[in-house]
Length: 114
Image (cartoon, rainbow, N blue to C red; front, side):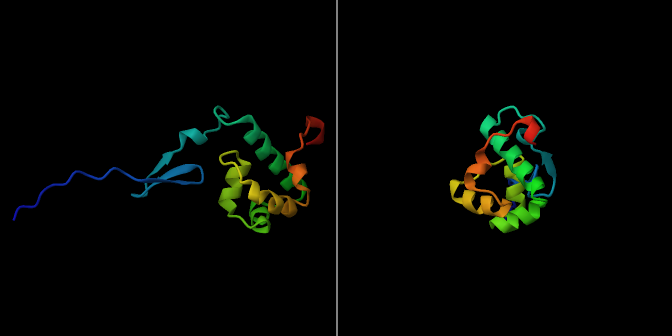
């Protein structure tokens, strides 16, 4: 019986932090998550920046904040970096972890308050 050559399967990629990880362990830069804010909704950028300000003000690391809010550290980091948005169901736990009220997560901050 002859063995047929099969065409290679298309590569499969998973997002790991800021890079795409191929199943063959090669990495591909994730262009949509570049340093550019183009294409990211303004409210997501503002929320991520607000989280960073509140977290640093509280003297917490991303790891500690994520653990206190009951979420994965890498997911929290990507919310803070404006890669992902967060579910409304997670807002109370996140606010409690940061020592603020849920509404304070959404307050605008002027440059003099940062």
